[in-house]
Each structure stands twice: as structure tokens, then as C-alpha cells.
Length: 210
Image 1: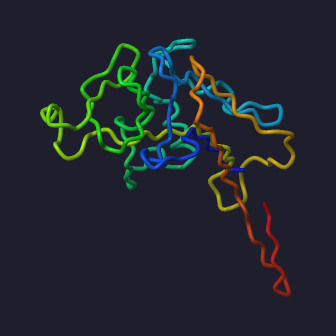
Image 2: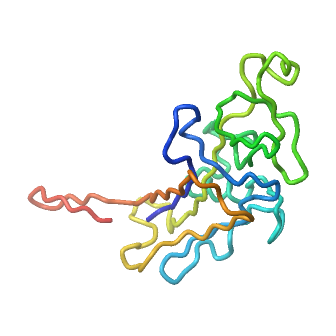
Image 3: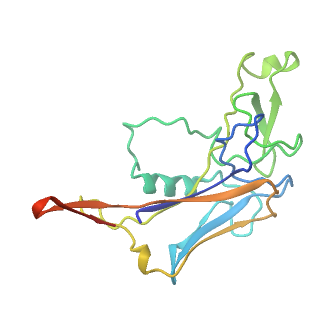
């Protein structure tokens, strides 16, 4: 296993919202945020210390998911690789919900940012005739949220099979802590990035190594 990615999304999906939105936090409280996450694989923890997503341990103010973003870059092996472009930016990554209007950031570019509250939650306005001075008349600047709780399990950058041997582990557990309970109607999905190698032996015998 080379990496793990866990995301929170709406389930079941609906026609009105962006089904591809990966949400950072779903609680409507003003003091809600994802505080940290960590994976437990067998008897070991990855990373050794939890990934902090709040300003400090126990804080209810988000840090913008800066540590989580770096963990995602490491899992994708794109740290400081500026040859690649991405649609993920500070307007989409690890954004909480608008607590004043109580809606989640899953309405792709239909709202505009006008500020932030003291807990790091966005203050947004819909694109209407009354709010045309806050941004573009036809599209807002708030894309659907994107966030993933990723961890890099790579042990080598070579061409050989590398990663963590998950077959010998008893279980894989995600330990994610929010300051408030998450809202019903959302699920957490985990995807495993595994490494396989095909070995071609004599007599055209193929062997798959995982």
C-alpha cells in the first residue's frame, strides 16, 4: 500500500449539489472544525503524530488545512513540483460551512467570498442583482470544497514494489477528530493506493506481486 486517502462527501448524492464536493466539516456550529487526523495500521500510527487541522490542539479555529495539504502532496509525490497545475486553491481547500446561512460549500461557483469570521468560517453571498458588486455577475469565486485526509506510506522512490505490506496488518483505522459531531447524510470514504508488479517468467508465465 503506497498511500491512503479519506474524504467526506454527501450520501446519497443529490441533483441540486455538486456530488464531487469533498467536505472539510459538515457541522453547522460556529465552533466546529476538523482538529486532527491520523491512521492506525496494525499497531503503528501514521504519521507518528496526528496531522493538525486547527490552530492548536483542542482549538476550534481552523488553520486552513495547511498540514493536511502537505500530506496530500507527499502522498501524490508532487511536493514543490510546479510543472503541474491544479484547480485546488485557498478558496476551495479545507473550507468550513457558512454558519450564518447554514449551507455547505458544494454549490460550484454560485457564491462569492466577502470575508471570514473569527473561527475561520467563510462569509459568502449568493450571486444576485443585489450582490453584483461583490464579484462577477455570472460566476462566483467559491468553488466546491475539496479536502482529503491523506497519508504517504511510500518507502522508496525507485521502480521496485514499495509501500506498506498491508496483508500482514490486522486492521486499518482512520482516527479523525472534529470539535463537533458531523451532520447526518454524509459519509467518509477511504481509498487505498496499492502498488503491483507483473513479473514475466519463462514460458510466458505472468506473476502479479502486490
